Image 1 (cartoon, helix red, strand yellow):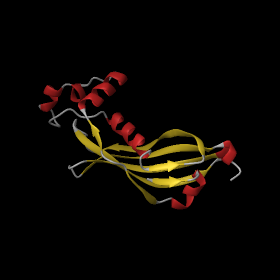
Image 2: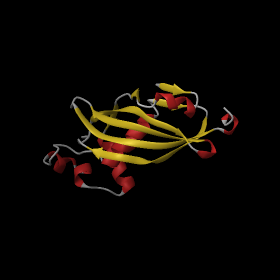
Image 3: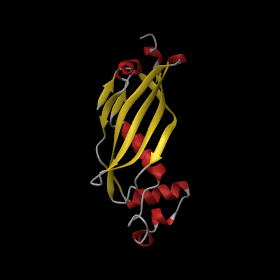
Image 4: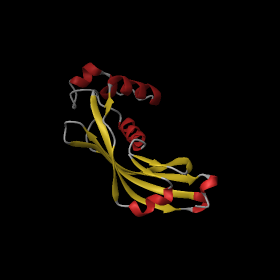
Amino acid sequence: MKRYSSPAEMIPDAGTTLGTSPWRLVDQQMINVFADLTDDPQWVHVDEARAKEGPFGATVAHGMLTISLAVSQLGEIVEVGGTDMLLNKGIDRLRFSAPVTAGTRIRTTAELVSATPRIRGFTEIVFGISVEVENSGKVALTAQVRAFAHVAESDESN
């Protein structure tokens, strides 16, 4: 894991790869729970028998589940200290390029695209991410994830 003591410490590392998360299993139960929570019970996600005969040969994770897992895996790749808040600002250039079938594992690789100081103690951080599907040689998605890190009040003078 790459650790920074503050968002400002990230600025010189722009353009570098931060690391890769551990593998994470995406199983049918996770896909079903996501389908229930988002009211998206599309058969390709939840009907195992029908999906077996479908275009992917199995059920597949929702694309939004995959990006959500990738964002959570950022926390396994990089830690930014000296902050009291980290806000998701958005996702840019999101592309789904391969399915994540139930029962497979994924991992996320992150690059620090930029870290830019902003007003009121914030730093805008842009991560480039890619999600790999184990044993497939395929990348399931690529994106840029934007976040605002706020420097903890006691650390703002640093």
